[in-house]
Amino acid sequence: MKRARENLARASLVACATLVAYLPALNGGFIWDDDFHVTGGSLRSLHGLRRIWTSVGATPQYYPLLHSAFWLEHRLWGDSVLGYHLLNVALHATAACLFGAVLRLLLERPAGSPARFFDGPLVGALLFALHPVCVESVAWISEQKNTLSAVFYLLAALGYLKWASGGRGAPVRYLLATLFFAAALLTKSVTATLPAALLVIAWWKGGRLSLRRDVAPLVPWLAVGAAAGFFTAWVERTSIGATGAGFSLGVIERCLLAGRVACFYAGKLLWPAGLTFIYPRWVVDASAGWQYLFPLAALALLAAAALAFRRNRGVLAGLLVFVGTLLPVLGFLNVYPFRYSYVADHFQYLACMGLIGLAAGVWEARALPRALPLALACVLGLLTWRQCGMYRDAGTLYSETIARNPDCWMAYNNRGNLLLGQGRNAEAISDYEAALGLKGDDPIPHNNLGLALAASHRLPEAIAAFQDALRLKPDYPEARVNLAAALRRSGDIPGSIAQCEEALRLLPGYPEARADLARALAAEGRLPEAIAAFETAIGLEPANPEFHADLGTALSRSGRLPAAISQYEEALRLNPGYAEVCNNLGVALAQAGRLSEAEVRLEQAVRLKPGYSDASENLALVRRALGR
Image 1 (cartoon, helix red, strand yellow):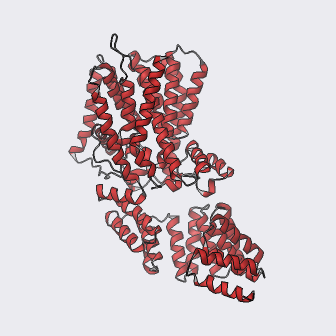
Image 2: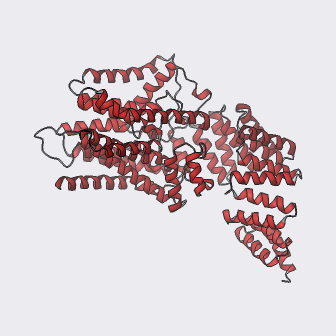
Image 3: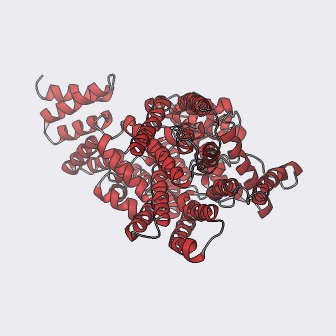
């Protein structure tokens, strides 16, 4: 009973310390990729939940359990960011407590040593909970994949270790551990490294591996984990875009990269200075002799630990768990973020437990001053508090990234996207041009520059920017649709139609391409074809209010007023603040002789958009017809 109370007190301490350190993160907003991960409109229904599990490409990555969690969270608190942040902090605190429980199971206190509240497992849990390299995983909503998968990963590890240490009794415990491992894989596939880590632990505890006792029970886990890893690599390559010149490294370059990546992460754990969202992307050069120092240093450290393992296998075990868990992001496999940088703090969220566990073991074995872990926890907690400020909002994130990494073209590009969404077109153009100055061979900034130029009514320059993007990447359907819209606005309807058709050839299920084709057909007067194309686009993306509004306009032009009114009403249901649709609905109602209803909708349009002259004039005409 006393031990249970002590463990509860330790868990409470870890949870409270985590909450305090991450208080600034609770005020954070949505940042990069959060709008893709928090369940989009087309997936918020039960049908959408089914698509999360059955349709590869419906979500940014095929992690169906993660996106099911996001689906449920959106039902609970919608777009309120506080709920997502609170849950992420709670998951991180839970993972830290579970990590402490795993360490408590593994670390044996030397005989005759006095009981301590601040024992090795508590120190390990606090180091993991408060280390600032974890901030990116906790303060960034999209990285709930890390915190949630870590909880399942550690539950699986704890269940398996208890089963293994209990003489293989209670098959239910092994089954539960297997289910938790499957849940971890369905949340993030890097957890596939768990069975290898468990084999390392078995070797560390026993001095040798038994095929029947240690390996056989983990064979199913190894097989399922390998399948999940290969599947994720295939999705990264075929659906997400982890291919091309930016990923063309030879075997020697990949080995050089792996050594440098491992040293980088170990360095950030030991000295967490200069943490940032996007680190500089290294140039990997097999002809540069100094780059061989990183893999040589990593191999030398492993060799030294191996030579000394007879005295203390724990050092080598901790290093092997650290490097083994990093294996998917060491550079041997292509990962989409490698376009921007070969390293990211969130890549070592699970791996850091290997070195932190090693530190906890040292603390457990040696009578070090009690003030040391408290001081270290306070320092790490303050660093975490400060690092959380970087994730306050998207603008702060990109500006801070640029300040810490001035050559980060992606931060300029993304800040440009943010400015463009705020209508600050001139500033957005400046950021896109800065991005192109750093990365002129990437089609994305060219495409985004075209959007900003088009929004500034500089159509010839916008068309040239879209064409530059397509010259670099001909199979870029988004750029083709944007070019189609610019061509349509400039009066080149046949050119617009041709670009939409090519975009649909590249990506047949692309709803925006289908809708833009419909707009071009409508501009050419081919209304029946336009209506059919709009209906197809709505079938692909039923919750897009613009599609319904544009279909309503096409139906109205065809004289089908009841159907047009129905589409306008659906657009307003999806976006109640859509002033232009209120105006169009008011006109359609007036044409249908429903003047009182038309007056209400036109008043709503004027209320939503003061100074909206078309709506004001239409409202005056309706009131005159009503005799007012």
